[in-house]
Image 1 (spheres, rainbow, N blue to C red):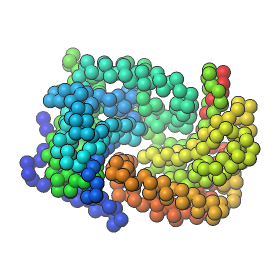
Image 2: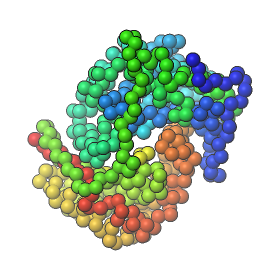
Image 3: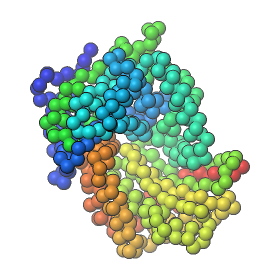
Image 4: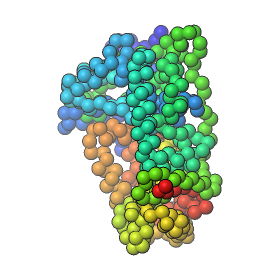
Length: 446
């Protein structure tokens, strides 16, 4: 049964208004699919990047790892496309394909010569819409994912980061591992995965981005032809053979604003660890307050990116108390996350934590200098420019913003960053980077 259909040759899309500076065009198909297109005539390459709001945060609590596992299984074929055929079709044209999953999304992309798009896009549509999820492939690929979990668990940095996420988000899906756990995955079944796929891989949850040497009419006609027919969100193929129910249970409830109300600590003693790790995290707003989230990214550069940043200069270059230290900011749909990570000797853990808190107090009491602010703006502006040079980078940028907010606000980033003042950043530091509300994970040699 097809829920969404379009007549052959009939236009079934409308153009979405965008900000004037947005270099691409956005369209909405009648079935709800969002299409972003940018024609770059100078390049012979075309990138197709399909983003789905079906990341780990959409999983029911007991189904951890389902979104990432499905990313693997998608490539295992349909009733009309045998396993491995898609990869052969793309690689035979000299193209490459890959996929990734986060808490907020899963995405699948092809990079190939522009003239081969008629050949490479249809099988990707077939995989995403009509994934068969055969039982034999499910069992075989589950072993691959279980091995991936075991390898990740052997990494001290992965263990530390996952512990930090769980400590930061104890009541929110962002705290759960994207890979899931061995015990959770071993209980899942092919029909449960089919139910998850049917519910979430629907056109209203998808953004399809085409960037490169393909003109607009050709791209839209191709997308309309191959992304018009989606199976219903629930239906017979999602049911197990014994007739039981496999309808998708509701995802675990989210806290409206993930936050750390006090200092939360976790300490792990690990064997064969040569250096201790100190990992600290502060939560901030998500896309509903995008300007504030960008401000935290400016503060992350100020604190721990580059030799002249405050923490690197003080703790590594001058005091010699850390082997390395860095700060970064992650923008997520529900919450931004500023982290500080240091590699150091175990006996210095307590003092380094205290010194980091001193730096945060200084941020909230004294505005940063214009010289520091200019450096941060310059680094972030250049980084943004460098990340938008290639068709694949642009496709990823548009798709990412489309699933967490809306595609056309991606281009506002440089302008927003330039507007920050020492006083506005001081206000953000006072609100979000307080030395009495953070999560911390310590890794110590055993």
